[in-house]
Image (cartoon, rainbow, N blue to C red; front, side, top):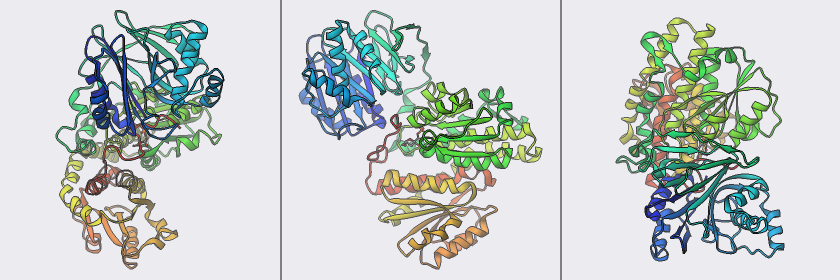
Length: 615
Ligand code: G6P
């Protein structure tokens, strides 16, 4: 949520900041801005809209060159998206310039105090309050910028990743973080600042990820100095060697990141199990899990916490874990869990699932579970993210950077990891037969091929999308472990096409949604070969007799549903427990094509953010 980027060094800062903002635009895209500093003058340009709108405006407004710059792409929290509320923000004197990702919760009282001292505010943002608070501290305490930032941040409540510079200190940017991510790229006497490493990957492979409540002074000619904001202690930062490469963060010939990411699924699922799943030897080895298997096996229950698509992966895991391991599983929205005074004991194991590893509610839920003594295991995609650091142990999905706001490859790689964990636990506990265990291992290894097969229906699905692109509502139905897939299919459609869609367990349809069915209601039914097949066939008949239109996801070779359905999307055969990994593919493609046909902004749907770092 909100992307920040900064540069200080010998190069011209403008192109680095603009390109960086484009790469971070997945984090927020309702407005964007840039400030450049040439050692004497500061020029600032900002606008409501996207980074391309900023570029158009900056072309006229930024007339100089500068070696220091900061930029911001916004997802509004305080104040509507407009030019004035866009970042960067000046302090009243015009000396300090700030960009901020996060929320200052006590901004209203600070603002009042500053107003009493004569400060005025142009915007409605909490950020402008923060930069003036820093200015006030700097003047009152007669301290340098770094110290002023530190004192000011000790007085605020909320979350932040900030970068701020001072007209009087042309060789320095001060950054700090709590709750929102911040990386510092280290070049040859040049530094890059960003919400993630993607803006500077072509310049350096070395980066420091600030921890919460840390402040860094990034000054030319000097090593980065990192301090704890609360107690002023100097910290020796760990310099990470980045594994990212430039191809991973570009579209690779696809029109949209979402499509690229859908098509990457065969390879990233393979990357996720590579070296961990050795089917021929009957082995699963997950580094983060090995030492903690007894924790899982002795647990009273497993609680899975997550948000959005990751929560849907958790729901799939509930079916898989309970079936294979016979350990009770509960799946909770992190946002509900954290505020409902949940009963958690040391005998509980919590699994937190998050693509970004930065979701504020999931992070807070993890902290709560830890406080209550639970063991917390993380499943994250972003290496070094806050959630991966906050959990006791965990397993990374190897999906690579996911840029499209609608999550696709993160979902299937999360299910891959969760399935491997369940199989490993079941094998150790003895709740799975040797035969079934070996079968699942081999079938899991074949999933990339199955996904490739499922992707072959793309053209057919595009035709179906053409037929239904103007529908106002969709219903998605599934049973068993495909019920969460129905939820996920509906979510994908809502997110990127803005068509209302609901996911339901097929049998529950009779308790409400059936009232909605008429000749205008497309119903997407996951009707693959499974123990529930006959029941789903009955559900389809109930819909047909009310004139509903059936778009069915069927297993190759299917006849009964294929005859009844108006349209079918075929997926290859795989054991029922693994079907979510393939049934989700046509639903991703359907939503993608409908959104493209409706001319929606597929990768940056309105109002959404990729990484929700505020609650
Ligand atoms: C946002 C994203 C979703 C994502 C959810 C949880 O809403 O738009 O795609 O599923 O956050 O994010 P996480 O990074 O924790 O998986």
